Amino acid sequence: MGDVEGETGSGGTTTVVGVNNAAVPESASYIGTNAIGQLIPAAAPSSANFVDDETVAGSGTAWTLAEIPEAGCVPVLMVPPFEEYAMFALVLGSTGPYGYTISGADITTMTSWPAGSMRAWYRY
Image (cartoon, rainbow, N blue to C red; front, side):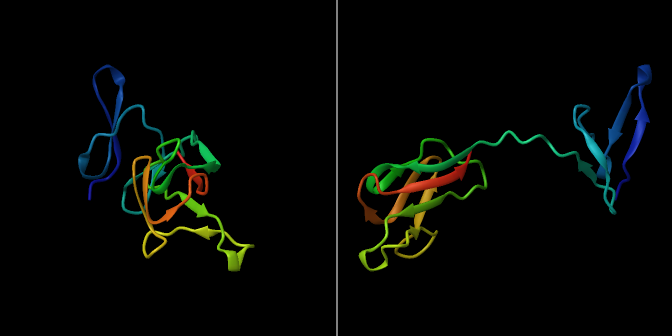
């Protein structure tokens, strides 16, 4: 494995070279290296936006979120309770009869739900 080192180029500028001699962007900010010489990036300021308690547009099995969730974000989707469990809402999962799939802002549920019944919480 290559070490992290600085090399002085023409004009006195320093180029940082990372693991396996990969060049590191000058605009990047790093706080050091780990035990195997990989650069540790400085924490970027969070610019995340959150949606709390959105009424999801749609009905039946076709739904659309107001925003596209951030990559890797799994929205929490809830639908109204069943009669026998009036105190609880149902959180939809990724499999089974109460599962769903998502592509961009579009959601397809495995079970049909009435318009205005689905709520969502997610990061975008």
